[in-house]
Length: 175
Image (cartoon, rainbow, N blue to C red; front, side):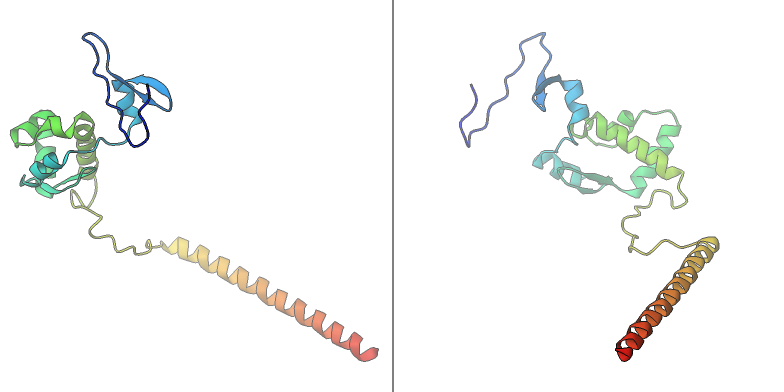
C-alpha cells in the first residue's frame, strides 16, 4: 500500500538472512548497488557537530567534510608507513562509521593526489581568484595571428561594403 500524500513511507526492515534493498528508478537494488547509485550519504546533525569539534576537521556539513592540511600530511605519512586509512582515522579520534567507507576511500585518494601536486595539501579553493589561465608565449602568438587575420577580414568586408554603397549612390544619381 502506498502512503497518502504528505506522509512518508517507513522503510521495511529486512528479515534475518534477507539482503536489505531499495528502489532506484523503479528498480529494486541491493545495498551495494544503492551505495553506487546514490550521491554522498548525508551526515546527521549530531555527527556534523561531533566532527566539527575535532582538531583535524576544518569544516563539516551534512554533505561535505574538509580536513586540515596538517591532518592530510599526517595521513599521507601514516599511509606510507603501512597503516590503513581506517586505522589512521580511528587513532586520531574520527568515527569511521559516521564517515563511511566511501568518504574514507575518497579522502585517501585525494591525499595521494594532493601529495603529487606542486602546492601540496593546501586547499586551492581558498586561493582561486578566478584569474584567467596564464598563456604560454606560443598561445599568445597564435591568438595574435587569429586577431590579425580577423582584422584583415573585417577591413576587406568594410572595403566591399563601401564599394556597394558607392555603386548604389552612383545608380541613384543616374536616374
